[in-house]
Image 1 (cartoon, one colour):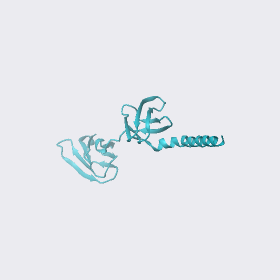
Image 2 (spheres, one colour; image 1 turned 30 degrees about the vertical axis):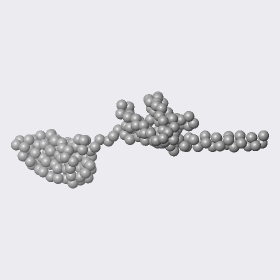
Image 3 (cartoon, one colour; image 1 turned 90 degrees about the vertical axis):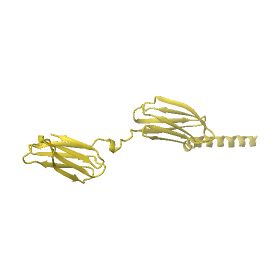
Length: 195
């Protein structure tokens, strides 16, 4: 009887230690990450049958699916483009354990070349115009001041300032309404400013 009790106690301790580490095992055998508005769930081989659920910030279940990862790794991609950016919970459940991951989706940044040139002009007085250029990816801006009558170039200068610049242009004998600015950055983005 004492031997039977010893075996029962040893079996109980072994199963309780397996239960204690099972959550850590599932965490070690799964990965969840977000890149922009896509969530990838990786289940490593040997997990067996698992249930994957995706919940929004309020806890509403958006998707649930069963998968089997017995003899090879399984990657489950989820496209979240139709949903708002934010934090989502990914719950992975097997018969023995469950892990919960939190991931945050975000918009893919627009490449600088696709963004408009941020150049602004403001009349300071009857003979002065202030030009501001901001958000440059690399230094180098060409500023041309042209006359509206005949399209002749009054000034053509290059400014090699990182990130942006602000400059006042003064005119003697010209009204700012008679001229316009053509501003082009090193990426080829341009903007024309009239006053």
